[in-house]
Image 1 (cartoon, rainbow, N blue to C red):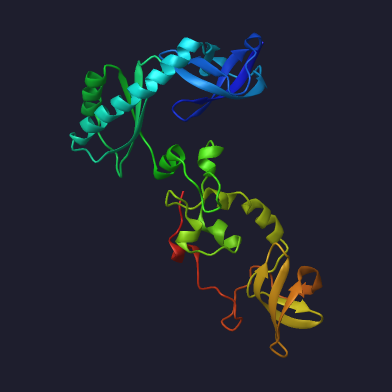
Image 2: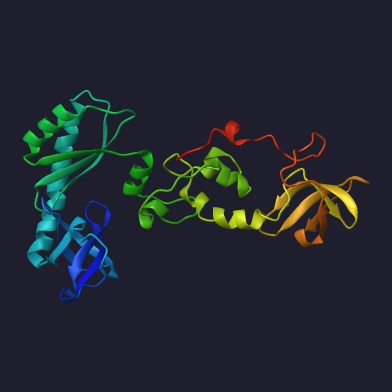
Length: 294
């Protein structure tokens, strides 16, 4: 029976691969993967279960075997070889006069292939550079241009929450994040607060966004006219998690906190425009903030 395993490669990538049940692999077991053109050393993260019938098994790498002591010794040697090869590649890239900054390099377990990741503000023609690197290192070269979020994922770090970066510890694919997510959660739009180590908007802005959207469905917008205990009022602010509102009563100008359940009715629709005299803070818009990031 074929099983699907999730493994963590030496290059820092998580990959799904195929194994068979009689291999009896467990979490943290070291294995050798066969990608066809090259082999990789990896560790098992978990077993996802039996391969679905409709799945394309040919697109997944195969687990050749559990890593032997000789394989583990070779993997340790590859770490040292990778460091010296990376230094050599960095010198060659530095002499190429291309607008490229090398992030890291990874050499496959069988030393047949090297993947070099780099940062560049624009597209680069590196064909000549690839030929020079292949001649110097004696292996196939693959150049991959990455973004600043990928660099943060590879290098790791500690976030402002005090935990390891989510992109390093468990996020496999980046989701689009925009400043509207921060606005609808009533977060400060200060770039220093809502930006991560990569300089882009924090991935965690998307984690609770759907929940805030559900909560806000029956909450009036800033500046909406509402009825509170038979009196007309304007919404100045809302606290979604507490489902409460800060309102100004039209009759006597009192400002008070009320819960959503205390509202009698909405006078205006939720899409009504905010008047100049409502007192709601509408100074910030998505277009004005300029903090939007992918």
